[in-house]
Amino acid sequence: MSLQDEELRNLVLSQLVDSVKAISELSECRNVFKKTTGDLVRRVKLLSPLFEELKDSDEALSEEELKSLETLRIALVSTKELLNSTNHGSKIYQAFKREEIANKFHNVTEQIEAALCEIPYKKLVISDEVREQIELVHSQFRRAKERTESLDSQLDKDLIMAEKEDDPDPVILKRLTDKLHLMTINDLKRESVAFHEMFITSDEVPGDSFQKMPSLLNKLMEYVLLENPANDAPESDKDLVKHRSPVIPDDFRCPISLELMKDPVIVSTGQTYERSCIQKWIDAGHKTCPKTQLTLLHTALTPNYVLKSLISLWCETNGVELPKSRETCRSKKSGSSISDFDRAAIEGLLRKLAIGDPEQQRAAAGELRLLAKRNADNRVCIAEAGAIPLLVELLSSSDPRTQEHAVTALLNLSINDINKGTIVNAGAIPDIVDVLKNGSMEARENAAATLFSLSVIDENKVAIGAAGAIPALIKLLCEGTPRGKKDAATAIFNLSIYQGNKARAVRAGIVSPLMTLLKDAGGGMVDEALAILAILASHQEGKAAIGQAAPIPVLVEVIRTGSPRNRENAAAVLWSLCTGDLQQLEVTKELGAEESLKELSENGTDRAKRKASSILELFQKVESDS
Image (cartoon, rainbow, N blue to C red; front, side, top):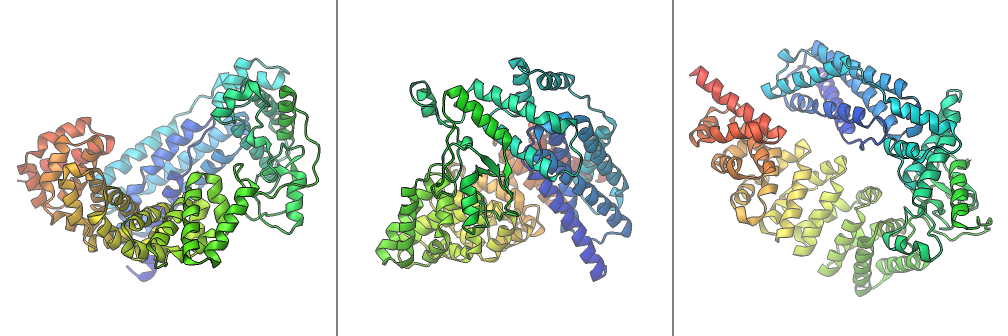
């Protein structure tokens, strides 16, 4: 295979793996297409083993094979685009356009099925299990292509009645809010933003659906609000609602001023603000959205008429006078629980971090650690104030307690996904790994937990592995407290999803401690040890190292007596070991595993059933050959 052919092969397979991963990670669809999208995503996920196995193999692919895989890649790109638009589009619009969107789903199903027809499975160097799974998925796509789903006639009737009548029956509105998943003020606010974005960006001439939507959305909003005017208030507030002034729903407050909005407008990021406040923010030279910190693509302000009418309705229902326009607003970037006092306190703590003496730095890092743990708004505010680079610097502190506070504060801040990126961009990974290697036990444990949190983002898995974290995590796995061992195990598991880190873990000697934990039933780490072994067994080096550790007896015992998840993982490891290794297969049979595997193939989880059945087939093949 020439270098050019190898690069093309690797590119196509990487793109296929990335496409399936992107589709798998899409949030659950909450609209009238929930079942359709769920079924499609589930089928696409099942294609992953084919691409992973081909990617791990060094076998060349023929021109015919590459062409068929490229056709499938194009089909998956179309699928992802459709799923994305369905997940984030206007739910009411999609309800009106159900037939048109259903046809789009049918088209991408046909594309995938046609692409699967072109793939020459018998020529590909893949395991029998993967070949059988892909054939099964192909048959599912074939049936889905031939099946025409009937549309919900009751939903059609409800949409017509709700749109036409000035005062629709509450029973109809209840059915619509349930079916469209528009049951809270939050849901309806997002729907309002989605509609506005669609209206602004759409190239088509507004038709009947566009004309009907604002009216219907207002009716649904009125219904939800009247059903529970305080449905977005905290539980403690709801109990007092009858005895004091009504609680203003958070979605009616400007994120900058925290006051009830009179003239709500939408900025390019989709967030809504009071016009005077956001205009003042923009006039001050800011080019980002105050709440999301995303760059504003433009400074045009679009009136949010739907939310404005909803605020008016709420004011009328609760006897509240609509506020008059204000000239000033308090500076606040996000979150409704950060007062000006809290913000000033955070800024004071940052000054101590930057220029204070060691004792002041330790105390300030400790306070930020607690504040970051308390709530999501604090995490946003602390990061926006510029704390992360200062905390990263303190990871190198010679004072153990300061170091503990700094790494734990970063752990708490990393709960916020945007903060994860800021922490990595501040160059924190090497310093966190250094704490993991040399810090106090508490600091090491929290460093492991921080690395796990950061590794949720795929590119960070590569960087963390390359920074030398895995040997240090294995050491913590061996000598940490029970909590530390679990932190280390979850980090190792997550990092090992990346193929390169599997080899790093095996070469760092992880198999021996995992086997020790697996054999210690009272140690509380059997679940974690088996999960990591199962993921490592899919790698050739991992399989070889596990096979040398004489694991068969304990794996067979787990299959006999373990929990459903542990039996599944034990069967997965056993299948990897027995595939292509007659000696391991014979040891398994000599230990009397056949009966337990038969029982597992009938009563286990779906994956456990497949693995157990595959091992039993290997037994039968050996018997027929002998």
